[in-house]
Amino acid sequence: VGLFKLSAVDDIRAMQKPAEHVYQQEQKIMQLGRQRVDGQYFIITAENSDALLEKEMQLLKKLDALIEKNMISDYQAIAQMLPTSLQQQFNWNLLENKLFSTGVVEKAMESIAMQKDALDEINKSFYESKENILTPDLWVKSAQPQWQALWLGCEEKRCSSVTRLIGIKDSQSLQNLEKLADGNTVLFVDTIGDINHMLEKYRHIASLFIVI
Image 1 (tube, rainbow, N blue to C red):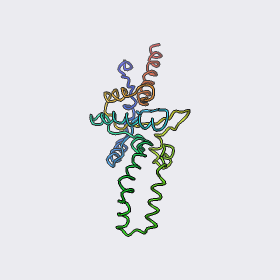
Image 2: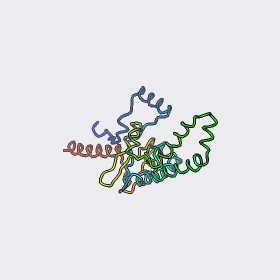
Image 3: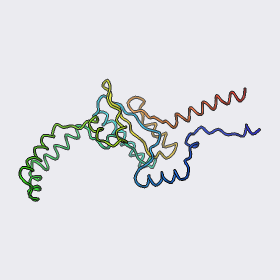
Image 4: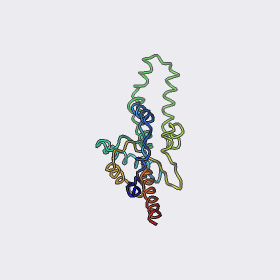
């Protein structure tokens, strides 16, 4: 009789409630500015790194809208840290037009009594940097470990990256996230959901043996 009173739980999140002291530690870490990364994320692919960053930025605008609706807390993406080559060139031109060619930098350095040789070196370094584009492969070498994992690299004219999701509020939020994927260049991955599905499948198989 007791067997038929058992209820099945296929959600792994309900099976792994952390110990109280672990939970308290996690809350303190989150309050210090670090948040728990969920088991859901996007994989983005494109024909080159610039196209990939552009596609990431399009996705981030949609994620920002979900943040405003309190459906997720945050995300981590390379596009937050690394501009496209076009944007980098735009930024360089802006600095050149507003600061260097107008003499603003020179006057500022002279006001603090900087030696002419040092000022010449600053100008030389800046103008030599014009063609120095920071690519994801270069950026990832100096990035923090948690950011390095977001770059999956380029193979056969296809570049890929990961956008992590933080603090997904509920199942409705999860459904809204799934809708952002196009099934081709933007894929939504739900590792928790996959495990839950697997548990449900195994439970069904086990129930057949019990009946037999």
